[in-house]
Length: 92
Image (cartoon, rainbow, N blue to C red; front, side, top):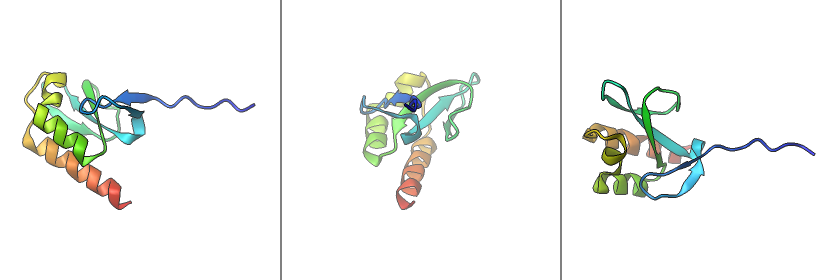
């Protein structure tokens, strides 16, 4: 009997749904308060996960979920980068 590897699940801050970590995008706030999109999932700092869908990103932007989670103002470029990541994934 092969042991199945446990898939790490993360909750989307916008939709509240649980998804495998690989299907999520992590947005991270460093100690210095800098916000960035963390595609590796390895950057240090406070992280929040959002689903790889335009809808989830739109909800996160509208309700300012990421700002609440990370306790910092999210620059517009971050949302634009998230959208680009989603669109790039859809082309694969």
